[in-house]
Length: 405
Image (cartoon, rainbow, N blue to C red):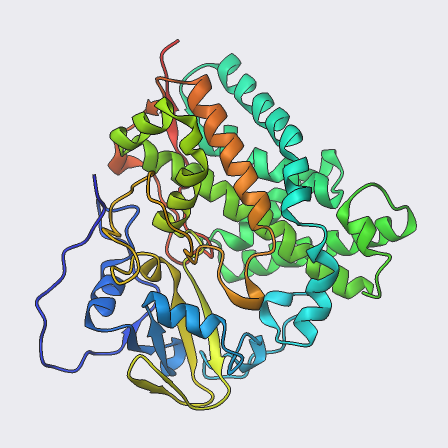
């Protein structure tokens, strides 16, 4: 089963600049919105109108997105993002995703050694135990279950909170705060309230770790030259990413597997496919849909001139389905052998926690399919509630599943 979208015949007229976000077509929960697919059909770089009528560009091609991510002529700095008709403030201290070198390197360097492949693999046993506990609770409660709340959210939440030393009894309320400003469905007032509450909590957590260090990453960071504000910002990035992206990959990935029975059967028959399956699901779903960069000078890209000061939107999910890079890109093929998808980005901002995400997904998918060999949707696929395109990370709100007892 593929999740491709039809495209319109080519025309000779100049494309009308599009606006974002756009909605996915009904019945295609895993495909990019059709407007993005059509934009890519016309070319890898398309005109775009940001909010407030500000002109920009949409980058949909694999090579072009990868090129921008590796090009120092494009900036990630928040205050340079020319997307609204007023000036944006700089990113708060520590929020390194929205900074350039050398500030970005100053924030990221103390973290690199704490998220190595070796260190993340050492966590495998703990991830396995957390996963087992979640599946035990699911089994004891019995079907049906919401896979989001019973499985997809708690596994990465417990892992990242333990890594950063969030006290056990505070994890639930903290997780809700983070979800409130990342889910894309709150009012502006609710978003500000949740964001402020999260910032206040992290300030208290940093102070507690500095006063009484424990065995966690945040405590280790208090030995660096980073001040409390910077540590708060770094913690926000790590916690938000660790809670939201992997949770949505686990839930949406399970949904995708259940909708592709032949692929699911192949994975059940050969657990050795798990590593490849994780990479293919990352490519196919691309839950971190897009990022932005601003040109510092005029740059020629994809036959277009990106003028200095113009902000571009990098579409990861169309880049990861670019037929120039991937054969049959709209087909979920767990046996696909390749490297180089952009689900974790590329260049100096490539996802710091990607190895942790791989460990969590590999362990979780394997255990879930082994424990519940008859797992299936408890509702029609079209009734599965999806996150809106305004959410930072794409996924499902809930995933009702059942199994034979």
